[in-house]
Length: 500
Image (cartoon, rainbow, N blue to C red):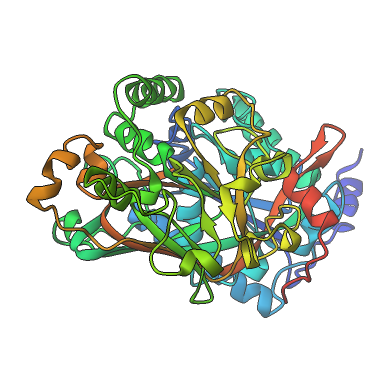
């Protein structure tokens, strides 16, 4: 070919600058906890290039940020705010449909956590000043349980141990799968305030170490024991009692990989099963309130034990203070564990405790309001309610671990706001000293342990747990021939109105 002909061909091609030239239409921010689970996230934060485009989806820009690095974490938050301002000013190109799932074209910003369930809420916590309505949330499961990932339909673990792959192929496959085979679903976010009496404290379980545990928690300058309250976000579920006690011991020996963590948790569980005795939660919990009105009362086993010790047989074994039992719903037994669920997932597997319960109504007498089955609905993660259930005994707990859960005792569905109020710290008199020697040391010292979305807390002389729904977020869950995530199913069967 003659040189002048080649010149004519080249000059016939023109590049025209536009406002959108070279700009991505979707920004994907991945906040990584490199120490979660098997520490797969270390490879992500050590990539020499932290901002890049996808080959199959060149309209998507991926940005990776280390959630344990304060400077990098703040840089990611600033970038999200910058992109949000660009969206509001119309400075981003329209999202081309192509192979993307239809729902994906509804948001320019994706925010994913890469870690365990605790990392999910840590990401949400640090984004409290951004506009949730412009964001899709999802996750990459690196933790031990990964309930959030499973309820979205993305599985318990990533498909390959090598998260990157040659030329980032594994990472690209993971991202494109979520963007091409997903659907949108809402998820309630709750705020929980855990408080203690002046004689006690609230603290995160485990040693005081910088290991990625509850990374967004603002630590006080003094001792942790001096905290009177901790407020945190919750999306999955809370366990008061059994799982809290076992998990608090687990946190002391948390290992660096998932299999070792499972072994540690098994050992801690065995200690309670064979050598210890779970205290009844009624020794701590006084009542539950909704909209500041008492709706459920709990019997006090300590009062009953003292009356029995002094030979007072005139009181009913399940009596409540005053005349409350005559009109107020009250618990009939002394359960060892409370489960408060927002999503139908628990213990690292999909377990719809609420939906599959066949009995257990005898756990509450004088049912009314939120404890009345006539007011209950199927469990949804976007309805502004949380489901409260109890485990009555160690035998019942073991049956549930074995996936036998039809007999779970349902307490009620509680809307926002609601509260669990604990009994005031009692005086340890000499007359009761012999009695107190025979009870569990946690009950004797008035210490309750709580698990909340994979994080564990210890409350000495607890005062209350206050729950309020503060927001809804949009998530991306699986929807393709391989299956549909539970949150997506709930979204398509829910009659609750959309938030603006």
